[in-house]
Length: 449
Ligand code: CTP
Image 1 (cartoon, rainbow, N blue to C red):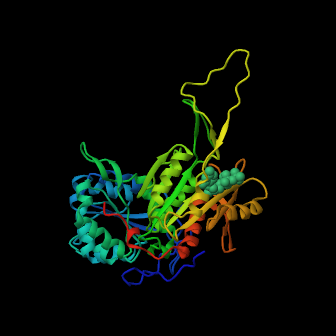
Image 2 (image 1 turned 135 degrees about the horizontal axis):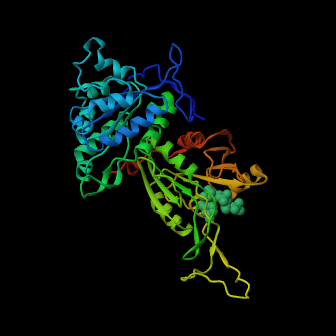
Image 3 (image 1 turned 90 degrees about the horizontal axis):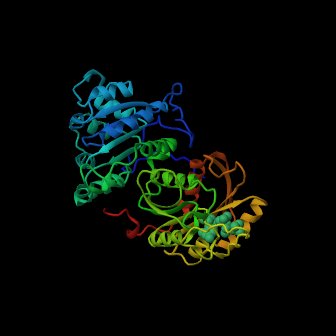
């Protein structure tokens, strides 16, 4: 696993010493400074977009999970949600200007003492101000004085998001080490639909938790400029319009990989099979049903990917024939046996013939017996670089929020990951992937729309 390094911002400014949460827990880790442990301090910046009302839910989740939140709205955002709402929900004063409580020097102190700043929603105007270092209100001052991780969750109309000015501002902020979450695609204000939608607040909350859980490492986006493809969930192989062959995969491990990759700055494509989990914030999710569809989606996304992680439980077989009408019982007759055919082995295929030279391929092995021995032979058989071997069975791994595993590397290294949240295992996978990544190429930088 990677060792924590001295926090250093991409622009060379040293980070504040206070933020040092441990890795991955469910609640917030108490922050250890020189004094007694304290609640993590989060600044929630709210800029003037209609999605400001969704930030109330983000605030609620942050406070209810034990974070000390200070809301800093812009004057424009107060058209949507008033100061009283922010103050009541956060239990802290909410001010927009630097001229209030001047003796406390809020324009400097709020940013300096934060463990995390999240601007949600973030307008095109706020992205521009942040990128250019303007400081004409309390939020923009806070952004200049913060030495902790900063997350921007943009929400705007598609045209504004795609405009080269906005895209250049986003690129500038990312280059400096900020985490700019890709907006979701979907219904916008009014009748419009497109990219620019505010992601699910519950998922932005998860991103905040992931970044905070990385402590000082939250300042280093070691997957910035990288495209990673993750498959998750289970495939379903239809037999007739009402029946399928499936498996018990919940998708939690693959979704945890997607969330942790976003928190580390990656552009993420998640190929998701039959999972009921909400789309993670900032992730391009491709929903599929069958193994054949999964193969097609993974191969397409993998063409410019730096890493592919196959966490999906892919059905090895599918019914040889699909009945277009429901298969009915026939009185007095035994059912016909179901003939099966093999599905393609996607992991073996992309390991042998990598869609992009040098890309890192990671597989998962779900085993019930002789777990390590089976894992080692599977690593050789599949030809991938890393194989996450975990034991499955009743009450183990499937559907659980926790997991334990051993990660086997093609070079012989073995990394045991103790029982813990699937996010912790996911972070260890990325710790092992990053040093193996190919030299970045221009094609792997984030898209301009
Ligand atoms: N996998 C795949 N295509 C398949 C089957 C599995 O890409 N048709 C991938 C899975 O996503 C996982 C890895 O291969 O990353 C191992 O999956 P697992 O089910 O453990 O292994 P199998 O190849 O199915 O082998 P077996 O069932 O014999 O253990």
